[in-house]
Amino acid sequence: MSELIRIICANIREVRKSKGLTQEELAEKCDLHTSYLAGVERGERNITIQTLEKIAQGLEISPVNLLKVDQLNIDDQYFNKQGKLHLLINLVNEFSEDEISKLINIVREIKQMMK
Image (cartoon, rainbow, N blue to C red):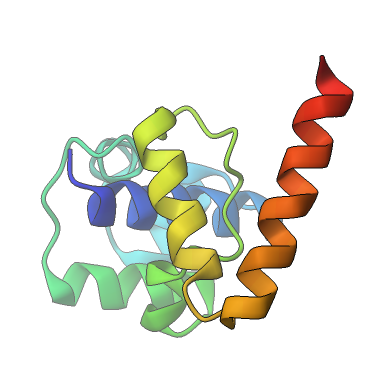
């Protein structure tokens, strides 16, 4: 499964849960079958842009929000080490060189404390 699919699947599930919706409730709002939506959340379904829009409407958010990485739970089962590193790179990509240097020092200190 590609990183983009993982991000979308995780975001759908996270937003749905944050709104207190079950898969059944969201599926009904989107006019989708519950098993189809469950497959989408697991990354087993290759959804169309139209379906992404339906799900976003059902969640009452912009479809763009389903592509964001900054609000994901990185302990999510969908992300292995490589996926988590990819998310981290996306999050810090807009940092200045000075901010990246500071972040490196913070990570070094944390690593030292964890020993």
